Length: 485
Image (tube, rainbow, N blue to C red):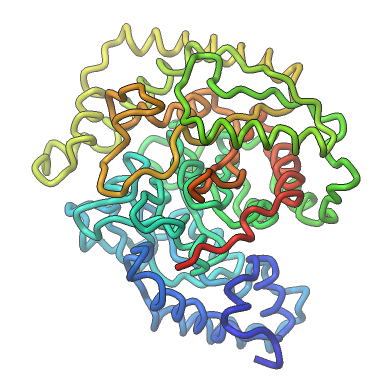
């Protein structure tokens, strides 16, 4: 280090600022890595976010990064040069154990990198290990029989969410500034809300999930998590773009994210959301139960959007078909991806997965046809809504972070939940629409637990959505708060 920040200050830097410091040679990649691993040693025993570490491999990569820094003009170095990152344990990493949180794959070491990992590496990220997930990323609470439970940095007896819970907890704990994740029914958004960070689910095809067993699958998405929206934009500038292995369209080109990343930070006093039309709904027009503490935060934050210039009114698309679309598509996808695992290792797989796979195997042709027609009706309802509105604002999660010993919440606002996915409807209803969605920190409930707000835009309007979220994030900066670990 050449007179730069100390280790504690490094851990507070955004990914953007951390990479800039490495490029400017005020700190070396190896010194950043020292701070990263020291933080893991200090806090990971409590949060259990990082489950696999490859320190020798990471230091070799950091040494190569420092050699590149010395030999290359700063402007020619990659945008995330020297930034350390553990990866979601369902994302394949070449030469690094990838268990998917399952005893079936407890010693599995892939030979390839998943696309999101490869694109982060090409952007300069140094891989340091893996972070925790629920088994096969099923459910929004990160526990499994291989590594145990990830705890929420804001309250160690509470869930960190899932399935990207290990990444969210690591980011909130200041282990790393940025992470990769995936989202079928809320797996980027729920942990972001629970841990007071930001998580982005892009439009289909913007960040291809490759390689894939079913290249045409549309419900699950890959995307980034970060403490702030600026870093989400930076991450998308290196993650977005088509891949020939995935035939889905890519409506938001990488150049759009790069242009947004280059824009000056929004000035909250200049009303940066002037003219933006925001429809807000607490119950999604379906009577979805939401805990009252979350509703209070949502009501308070509506005023922030209005102060930033947005026109905010009660409005929501007709989502009556969304449950059917999500439930059938999820069951189908689970059966496609995990039927062989359940058939061969049923006794090793958690019961929620067995139930969901069997539900998929039991689908009839009539159910699949009905779901296809429901998806078409839902698409039209959402299209009509976004003809008038730019953004939909809702709660991200229906509950505050719940006790970590629970597998899933059995009641929400006094209403019983019948399945392990029902309490996530605030996220899964939006998943069914196919629209891009981002969870941003919205403040804290009366007990100091984080609350996330969900912003949704029309398919392909990913850049515009992040621009709106960025203005709100700069005006509030709730993610600057640090959990007292």
